[in-house]
Amino acid sequence: MWRPQLKIVAMAALPVLLLTGGMTYLLRLSSSTGAVVFSSPSGSAVPESAAVPGEPGASRSAGSSAGAAPGTSSSESPAPGATTGMVPGATTGTTGTTGASPGTSPGSTPAAAGSSSPPNNPPKPERATITVGGVRLDNSVPNDDRCLTFTNTAFDQPVRVVGAGVPDGPAFMIATESERCQDPDLLGHSFRSCDGATLEPGGTGCDSGVGVRSGGPPESDGGLKAVQYSGTLQLTLRATCTSRAGQPCASLPARFAPSSATPVEVTWTDPGRTRSIVVDEEPPSPSPHGG
Image (cartoon, helix red, strand yellow):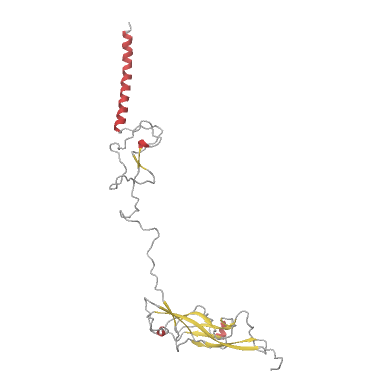
């Protein structure tokens, strides 16, 4: 009487056995071929070959990643039809792009940012100090014995004023552009400073004069204490020679050969002109012995 019931139970268990056998077959097939990858539903998909950031040439297998779901494939062979990300023609083991800048030929090194060719600097001139014999600036004399106007009528090129002084006067006497030597009524023209001036051939020139340095005796308008002192007001001049033609370049020593490629910068002092100044000084005390 139990046979009909056993037959019914056996009929009901048959589908379960078939399902179990099919799942077992699929799991074995997955572990042997590596073509099917199972992952945790909560995990993100990982490509078969992924480059490790910052390590060109290294790759990581999806099966060796930490935290991979049980049952994932450990084979490093890519699935049929899958791509590895390798650059065509690259050495085995490298992945990703070459990193070349746009427009850069393969194998060439990109130019450094901000680099440029060196500028074409003009040649640095050789320097010489000379004496220009017999040639001097034209020194016109205004209606005052302290002031002077310098004009370039003797040189064949522009000359630059790089200094002024009174080398043979008393220690307190200096070259200066006092208010008196800036008076247009006295000069007969608008004042033109000699400080850093460039005197063009036949140009308007520049104005200077003599005065008393700070701490010196006061200037005098006359009287018993008035004493007059004189000194030569001179300008130090400079020019650049690219040949020996004309003054001051013709006065260069023979060892110099100025040219456009090897210019020579010459410096000299103009002879200048004597200027005078009157200051107040205490008369010397008489000798107690009357001598």
